Amino acid sequence: MRICFSRILITNVSAIFLAAVSLTACVSTSQGNFSKESSIELTDAAHILSQMSTEEKVAQLFVVSPERLVYGVSKGAYTQVDNKLVEAAARYPVAGFILFGRNIQTAEQIRAFTRSLSKLTPIPPILAIDEEGGWVARLALSKNLFLPRFANMETVGKTGNVENARGAGQIIGSYLATFGFTLDFAPVVDVNTNPENIVVGDRAFGDNPKLVSDMAAAFLSGLHSTGVKGCIKHFPGHGDTKGDTHKDYVAVTKTWDELKTCEIIPFRQNLGNTDCVMVAHVTCPAIDSLYPASLSKTLITDKLRGELRYKGVILTDALHMGAIVKSYGAGEACVLAFEAGNDILLMPKDFHAGYDAILKAVQSGRISEERLNESVLRILQFKGY
Image (cartoon, rainbow, N blue to C red):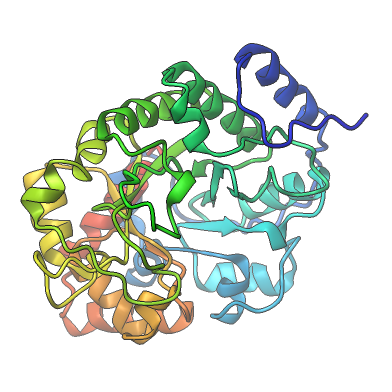
């Protein structure tokens, strides 16, 4: 039976939550075992770290698509594990994988794929996806899955009822968990204050920072109730912009003090709720005139880590986006992003070049072993060790 929840606003959370579970509960979990024996004892994070080579530590800084793991760049579409992917994972035991619509075919296929991916690396990988609800929903928008769909988070925000946001998180988290995903790059906590914004828009809960804060907290609570981790984005705020960082340079003209009166509020209030923070590629010339936020030590180390006292995992937005690749090579971008204070480097345009650049920087002493260990330890703790 085909059940369609296309473009809905959740009003009966429990009923639709149960529907979401029943739609996916019968998915087959049989699949091949692609894992190789590892000498790493998966005990506590510090012990795991002590057993890792420098090369393994560097690989642990990256979350990439399966295609980039194999080819370095985006090429084709993986829907199952093959020998090339096994060999690439043995050479580059990355922190995790991110999947897209191109990787999704059927319920049985995606479950088998994530189970295979989860066994590819000695330290089980993060399995991530962008599933915000609305038009950024890789699984819900797949025509073969028939999952619950949300109009957008702005519609949820307009109800003023945080239980609707919590329900959205529960529903999304329930099917993500069923399909084997461990991390959702959601919710968006940008405050949509610019009506000309073309990249955030209705992905945001609204234009009021308190509303966005409360809705995001509830969404994260819903996600966590299903065992799925969440990620608040896009620090320090992408709501008051006109351009699209997927394509090119985008500026936020506010000062840090001005950002703290609006954009920073949902981040600050959810740093204790979220599992990680994603940093945008917006440039804030009044704060750092040289680098976009994702490459800015001022914004990441001084502001997010220092002033806001965030101790969890920080990751870049995708490093293959136009705002980065039009000004920086893949290797340079990865090194600058890591030096700025990011822990995870998400999808550089050329993963192999990015990996090589970080490894070379460590070997040359540009990046210290202490700094490398700091991020790898944080990533291992994120994974639950």
